Length: 382
Ligand SMILES: Cc1cc2nc3c(=O)[nH]c(=O)nc-3n(C[C@H](O)[C@H](O)[C@H](O)COP(=O)(O)O)c2cc1C
Image 1 (cartoon, rainbow, N blue to C red):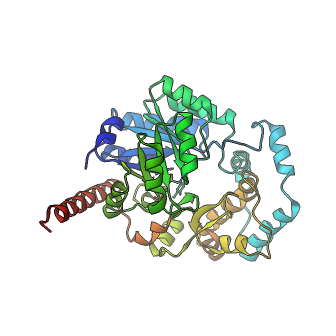
Image 2 (spheres, rainbow, N blue to C red):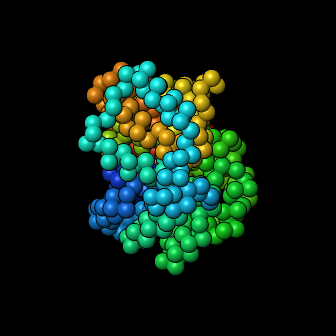
C-alpha cells in the first residue's frame, strides 16, 4: 500500500503514529511509517533531547511533532502571577474532594523530594500550552528536520502556520466535525486528521465512519487521514474506502514494547474490552476518551463536584495523578483502582505486547491483503 500521500510525506505506508514516547516514534519511523511526537507535556529541554535522538537515529526519514495549543487559553502567560491567578480560581471544595478521594483509597502523599517536580508539572497547566510556551516549542521543533507540525485544539495559531510554511514544514490539524475541517482548510492547514468519537484522548461526538467521508468531501483536494478506532489493517482499508489517504493512530502504540505507558495501565489495557472506555472530563476538564476506573467513576458521579474547565482541572489533579501513579507502581490497591489513562475503544483489540515495528508491519500487510480481496470482489474472481 503506497500512495501519493506516502510520496509527499516521505513514508513507505500511509500510517501516522501519534505517541508521547520518543522510542515509539523512532521505531515507527524507522519501520516506514510516520512517527509524530506528542510534545504538549514536554519541557523545552526534553523536546530538544527527544528530537535530537530521533533525527540522529533515523536520518532522512520522516517524523513530526504534535502540540496542544488551544485557540483560546484562559491563562495569560506562564509568569508566576498568571499561574497564581489560575490557582485562585480553583474552588477549595474541589481541592477537598480530591484529597478525600485519595484518602478513601489510601493513596499516600508524595515524598518531599518530589514536591518541586509536581509544582513544575502543575505549572504546565494541565497539558495545554500557552502561546508563549508554544512558540518556544515550535522554535525548537523547527531547528530539527521535522516534516509536520500538528495541533489538536482548534485552528493552530497563525505564527505556527507561517513559521512552518516558511521552512517547508507542513501543518496538520485534528478535527471532529465538518465545520472545523473547513475552518482549518481556510486557515492554510495542509493535512486534515478526521478524528472520530471512538478515538483515545480528546474527541468529538461523531463516529469515524460518519465523519471521515464528510470531511473528505468538504476539504477536497486537501488530503485527509482518518483517526479513531484504527488499530488493524482491516480498519485501515476501511479508512481508505471512506476516501481518506491514510490513517492516524494513537491507542494501538500504547501497548507496544517501546511505549512508556505506566506498567499497571499497560496491563489494564491488555485486560480491557471495548466497553471499558468512556468520554469524560475527569482528567483534563475537556471530554477525552479514557479507560474507566474508580477515578472516572468519582468524577462522573453527579453527587460530586463537576470537573473544572481546562486548564484548571489539569492543575487541580496533577499532583493527585502523580500520587496515584506512584501508589499503583508500588503495588498499592487504591492506586491500582484509581489509575487510568487515555485510550480509544480499540483497546479491546490489544491482547499482547509487541514491538512497534511489528504492529506497523502487521497493519500494513493486513491492509494489502484486504485491498486485494476487495479488488477480486469487483473483478468477479472472489
Ligand atoms: C494516550 C493518548 C494521548 C493523546 N494525546 C494527544 C495529544 O496530546 N495531542 C493530540 O493531537 N492528540 C492526542 N491524542 C489523540 C491521537 O492523536 C489520535 O487522534 C487518537 O489516538 C486516534 O484514535 P485511536 O486512539 O483510536 O488510535 C491522544 C491519544 C491517546 C490515546
